[in-house]
Amino acid sequence: MAKKQFKAESKRLLDLMINSIYTNREIFLRELISNASDALDKRYYLSLTDDGKRIDKKNLKIDISADKANRTLTISDTGIGMTEKELESNLGTIAKSGSLEFKKELDDATKNIDIIGQFGVGFYSAFMVAKKITVETKSIHGDVAYSWVSEGEDGYTINTIDRDQVGTTITLELKDDTAEDNYSDFLESYQIQQLVTKYSDYVRYPIEMMVETQKPKSDNPEEFETVVENKTLNSMVPLWKKNRKKIKPEEYNEFYKSKFMDWEDPQKVIHYNVEGNISYNALLFIPGKTPYNFYNADYEPGLQLYCKGVFIMDKAKDLLPDYFRFVKGLIDSDDLNLNISREILQQDRQMKVLAQSIEKKIKNNLEEMLKGEREEYEKFFTNFGLTLKYGIYQDYGMHKDTLQNLILFKSSKEDKYVTLEEYVERMQEGQDLIYYACGETIDAIKKLPQMERLQEKNLEVLYFIDDVDEFAINILNTYKDKKFKSVNQGDLGLDSEEEKKEKEEKAKENQSLLSSMKDALTDKVKEVRISSRLKSHPVCLVSDEGISLEMEKVLSQAPNSQGIKANKILEINPDHEIFKTLQKAYEKNPDQVKDYADVLYNQALLIEGLPIEDPIAYANKICDLMIHANK
Image 1 (tube, rainbow, N blue to C red):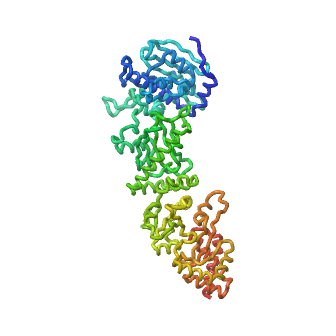
Image 2: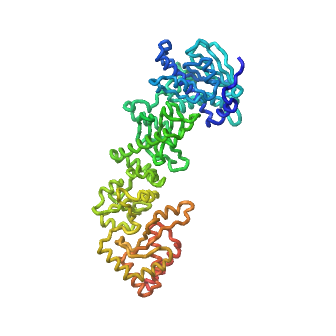
Image 3: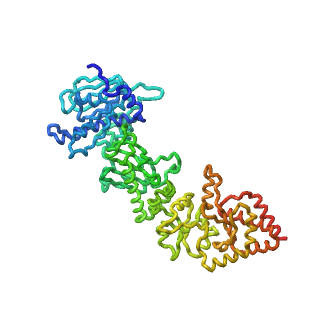
């Protein structure tokens, strides 16, 4: 029969199919297996509706064979087959899908039949690895079998052949190996098995291949012999489509560890299915341990995506919000709009609805764990709580309402984790502020001079030991109408009216001393003032509203920080012996107060974990003051 040209923009379009649509050559096997699965679906459907075409389901299968000598890879199915007209229509016209046409012909009652291939281009992906493709097929609707042969852009031929069995056999004559591409890999048994497991493990029909295995000899079990036997390469029934009540915890654990390359059992399994505007099955896991590279740039979050049991994508990032990036797992949906190569999701309303549904389910599970399994939740939060805090801070606080009830902080109340809701519920009568203190460790926070007054009044303080904590809280601003207040910033609202008056009087009495100290420190501090937050310590450093001392430390570590500084205020305890010493020194020699001011300021910096500008000068000044004190 004369060679025919493809019914499309021919060479240009076929070249596009081969070289541009698909980013990974190995995809071709997934596409051919998916087409074979569709053909089996069609035949099975017809067997249910046409008594004359009945077939035992166990005879519906896909066979793969490799011939290294002739460099051919063959994929056969016992599906519906094709007539000459269908060969001409489906394979002679690029982007023409027989599966899609078949689905359109179904009446309303049967439109939910699963058909994978709806674009009609998957078959041509085989030309990425093959220089010649031969399709031999016999339709269930006809008595004559046909072959379709093509070497690519120059067209194809269709001829009649002898074939008794209904179904289709596709033979790929692989391209010659080059320095860049080793096409022979696709003839290796182990490679074929890996690709089937990766992309087509859950195709509902058995995918079989003759495989060499080593077995003990029957007459001598200590010796092994090579045996060739038929092996089913796919598991067929996905774990996520099984009845949850019949799945043992060990099955979930083993699936997770083998699928997601983890040594630890998952902490939590979220297995569910949704039916509605978009239907899908989900099998999600919260790891039992933080991945070693979780906070590195090379960590790739995202869920595996399947469409009708066929693997589509390994890291579908758009299905998970960044603050739930710790979740691993997979989604299998029949309703997704994929692009033409089935490699990338279309950005459409369905995608957003799916992502919102997944996010809501994860959030609900975390809330249930927090309420009903507190120890488990605290373990989870120790591993991944930082991500939730970053989620509050990111995107200008867009997600704060979603996450604010999921975050925990250790607090001065027994050093245990507390939610913001729990803190507010046990606030003292008349307390309007949620107090917090920042530091590198809880022990360091406990030693802060500013903590004494709050402890004296039995006020609970949240411990902020992560860099993001204060940034996240500033985004929240309030929780249940209660404002957050740093023990290191502004007025803590702890003084009675009588205490306020006493403080004001002392400030007036010592105004010249305080001003002299401020002048001595030049632009290092905004103000030197009498403190109402100190009890036994002589001095402390606090900040004005805006950038806090902790924020200054964090921002100074960032590139291009441009020297962002907090407006520092040096507070002095008027009831401490050091204040009386300052008063006496000022009366005797006002200039000497400059040295005292500098020493006290540097001490306050050290207490806050901030660097001293000139450690040598500070050390020498301490020595000088000690020498003068003994003269």
